Image 1 (cartoon, helix red, strand yellow):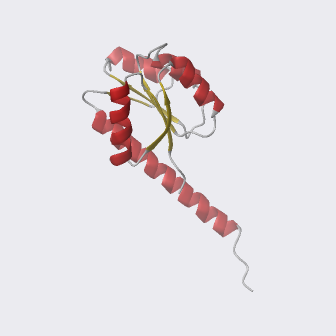
Image 2: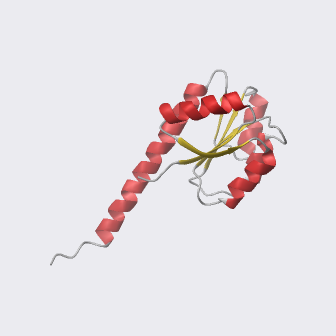
Image 3: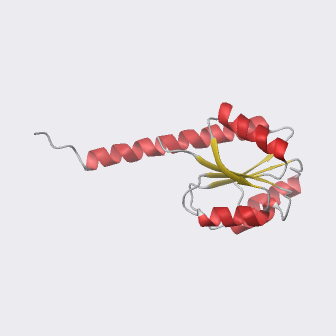
Length: 146
């Protein structure tokens, strides 16, 4: 099974720790790396441009914003999902986030269950796609019997 590579951009250490724990225990998602600033996040996501599956991004960061991270990752692969997680999930922020390429927006205080459900769905989708790819490989390259 392929590892579901998740990157978190969060500047609050307590929130980051709690989020990593919840993602691991409830959604079985391992956070591969994290950062607290727009520039660090944008650089990591670009440097690993084809090797991550999900980025969970806070709106307000130690330096820059989550909107800047979203904008920097507009040209990602179709399988790569970006989620904004914020305490300020107003209708305007939701619209702006989606316009910048967010696949989903969740409110930290009221929609954490929704985020975890989203992560579970994305993990299952990856497992299903990998299973179908394995099946295609087996069918196109049958084993030779001796």
